[in-house]
Each structure stands twice: as structure tokens, then as C-alpha cells.
Amino acid sequence: MKSSPATTLTTYAHDALSRVLYGIHTVLLFSKSDLVPVITPSMGMCLVLGAPTDLASFIQGVFWFQLHILSFEVQNQITGYDEDRLSKPTRPIVSGRISLDDAQKLYYAVLALTLLYSSYHRTVHFTIPYFIAIMVYNEGGLSKNWFMKSFLGAIGYSTYISGTTRVFDHHNPLSATSIMAVLFSATIHTTTGHAQDFRDRSGDAAIGRFTLAHIEPQWIGRGSLTALVCAWTVVLVAYWEPPLPVSIVLAVLGIFSSCRYCYYQSEEADRDSYWWYSIWLLTAHALPAFRRLSDAGIRIPSLL
Image (tube, rainbow, N blue to C red; front, side, top):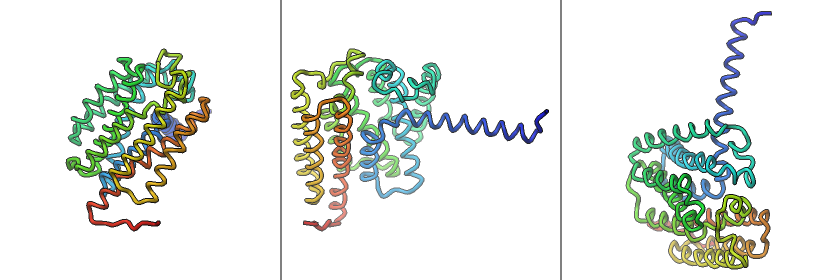
């Protein structure tokens, strides 16, 4: 029995919509694992530094951010295919949602769109160094060096925050507070970025990457992380001068998350510890809000 034109059109529209939704879902899955450790603290700081903003600038800033993180993640998951098969089998390429060839085409398309969109927002001076950093990280293989992995990751953090803040703040230059916040974020990631490596030891070993997480005895890498997180907590509280309750929360999160790394040393436990470290990082990235409030003459009453 022959289908009517209306039925054929409905079927075609349904299939087209399904493919579009499937594609959008696939693209979002590339950055799913970045939600807590990267997207949330970075976007939180952008809102602190770039507010008040309007809805249009907010949407454009989020799109700017997503394009930049996607340009990294697609190529990272192409070059890290073997590692992801072991430690992150649900990612789009290794799970079969998108082929390697199609992922490479997506990468080139995202690079071009990111550059054009960055040009529109007059933020190319952030995007070009970022492109260089992600290329030497992925294609250049510098991600296999533990220090360069953290250092190049710090460039990513600083780019996300700087560029998105500029868009949120209607293209105004970064303030002195914003510049210090970006510098703190980049330095924190450079010095404590190995927190993420403990949960991926088997995957890193499979591709020949040596990190602080592989140093024996384990207390060397884990102890250094504890010392650095505690030191950064003191520095951040001293510089940003948040209310006492906030300082206590930051200190408790820092001590709890870093001590977990020392006492629970399985990769599964390290994933939980990394989540708590990310919450500490998110709280640390919110601290510039108190400097902005102070500069605006708004006093936060102490709760204690």
C-alpha cells in the first residue's frame, strides 16, 4: 500500500528531527565529564566577574565557552581513543556514537566556527593562544608530560574565564580583580591539577603517560596535593577576605578532599575524592565575589 504524501512528509520530518537531536546529544556528551571539574567552577567565576549581565550576553557567553571547550574535547578524545577505551568507555567516539572520521570533521568545523565567533566578539587574542595550547597538548603529545598537562590545562581555564567574562561584560576590558582571579585560577590548576590524575592511573599507564599519581610511594604525590590545597586555601582566604563562614567551608572542603586522597587510594575512591576536590575548586572560584561586593561598598554581615 502506497503511503500518502502527508505520511511520507511526517516520517521524513520525524527522522530529520531524530538525527538532529541525536547529533546535539552527541556533541554535548563530548564535554559531559567536564561539567563538575571545569564548566561549573569556570562559569561560576565568569558570572562573578562579568555580572551584572543581560540574557543575550549570557547566552552568547555560554555559547563562546561551549565552542572553546568542545574544540578541545573532540580532538582530545580522538587522540586519546586507546585511553578512553580503558577508563572512559561511555565517551562518544569509543562508545560508537560517532566515528573517528566524522569526529575529525566535527573538530575542523568547530575550530572554524570558534575562530569566527571569537572574531565577532573581539576575543581572538584569547582564542589563538588557546588553539596553540590544545594542539600541542593533543596532537603534539605534551599531555604525556605531567607538568605540561597541568600547565596547558591552566591555559584552558584562563581562556574560558577571560573570554566568557569579556562577553558577559559586554566586551569591557578585564578589571584588576578579574585579572587576579584568572591568574589565581591558572596557578591553582598548574600546581594542583594532578588531582585528576589519580583516578585515571590505569588509562595513563596504557598510553605511557607518567604523572605524579604514578610516583611510589604514593604519599609523595598525594601528600604534595594535600599540602598545596591547604596552602592555596590560606592564600585565597587572605587575599579575597571572604566572611568567616565561607572561609571555614573552604577550609573544610580543602582538608576533607585532600585527606581523602591520602587515606583512600583505589581509582574508584579517587574518583570520589576528585569530586570533592572539584567542589573545593568551585568554592575557591566564587571568592572574588566578595572583593567585588567590597569594591562596590556592599558589606556582608558576619554570621558568627
